[in-house]
Length: 299
Image (cartoon, rainbow, N blue to C red; front, side, top):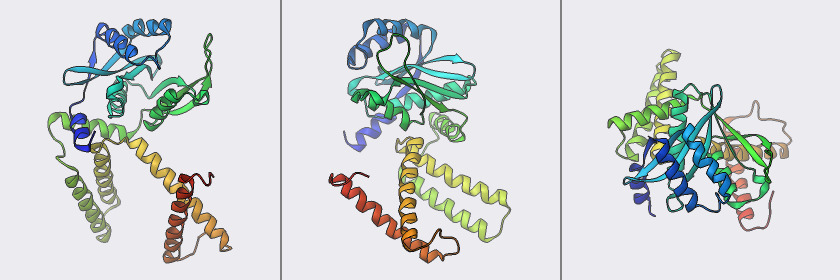
């Protein structure tokens, strides 16, 4: 599927809350479509009945339901993903992310401050559920504890995601704006807006404007960058995780280079000196990744 088709698909995904009876039928259909995930009839039946006491969100494309996420509330101020899946032919198209985003929005409206989910532990080395674990990770969930419920043959992992996050409040406001018809037509205009915000920040600093004004301009820049991330269909959490990993590798390389020069840190060094180290670190990391991709070395 090309990028244009992906964008068209993304724009036509509708997330709506559905009645419990509809949710039960949809749960049955999706479970049958994914036997590698839902292969225990007794457990499936428990889920089919369990959705009747939950909030059920469904993803719809062209008037057909293609995915569902079900929320319950086991503890005060905590929401929990009771059941979630997307039909096989509609996976890897951003539908799961949209369901999680809308679920977070609903949970916050109901005063939940955290969202949890239980899935198979990556220690079980199940390729299907490893993808599930990685999906939740990319949507901001972090492992809280391992557990093995009574009568379970497998180790599970309990994951948690904080909901009191201003980034998600902004994404929620962006969604409301789009539904009202106030939205960006393309990426180019968002990028131009970000460039304009940089100019305004520079101008505010040069004019020595009050700190609140400068902070406001920096906030506008952050807003435009998050809008671009969301427009492209990327999870903000996943994007931040990637940049954290990238920066962490670069800093590790810089520290190694600094030690080789007989320095304990870079305090007092010139900016040009640090920039040169940054360039060398970038090259070192790229070489290491190239070696790893050839299977010659795994650090």
